[in-house]
Length: 188
Image (cartoon, rainbow, N blue to C red; front, side, top):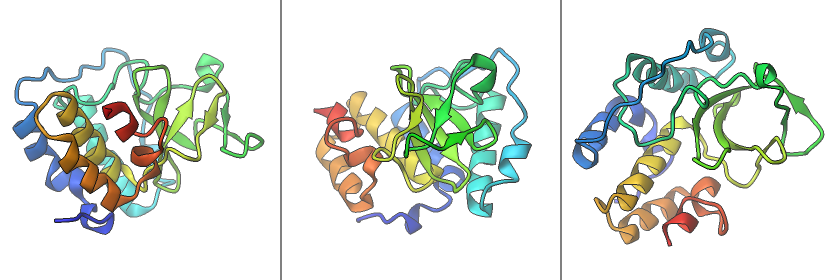
């Protein structure tokens, strides 16, 4: 069955736990040791469905119940860009954003951060240029989680790349399909 972005609405609440239990039953859970800045001001700026998805993800992170399938650490979740003297440029390389405009949800393992924007999209903040990448975004957090869980399942040899690739193609997310740095590019 091909999935569409609309069909994945609510994935984080509805299906994420089952996928994590099926493919990552023995993974340790993420533990955040440092205080995380309050998420409520950012949630208030999001569309309702995006706020619900991020609030559910935040509960998993803060409670220590999220298995290690995304790189969520003290240094990546709720990252304080201003407090760490990091700039956030929008993809036009001119518009300056602030911590009020993004919420970092994870690292890609190479210093870049996956961030949620106030429109509900998930993007990569490229650390070398301190910019939000235009060509590696996901429509929303549910699609991002669905994609990253399957990406990690392929890396763990729990799923075949071909099955994941078909879903990624159907979803048409730049963050998965970008030829050089999308998730599929790293599964070759």
